[in-house]
Image (cartoon, rainbow, N blue to C red):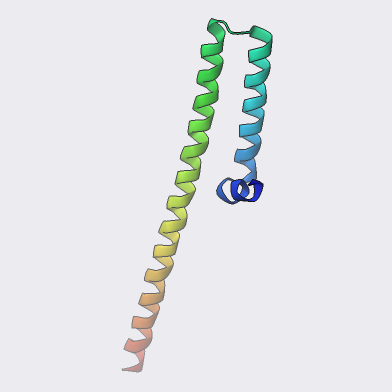
Length: 85
């Protein structure tokens, strides 16, 4: 289970998730179930959303780089064919 999480998220994101969750739990126990809990849960959800967006962005970058590498290889092949003729 932990290896799956490590493959999907970088170590920085995992640290942020852990710290944010610990602070959320601490706020829950110190403040109790009051109005401030809504504020604390909102901060927690925003942090999770930012981490998810970061993960999706890194996937998009990897896909784009893979496509660019493929285009580069095709261009090299075309140049090699052109120089032979």
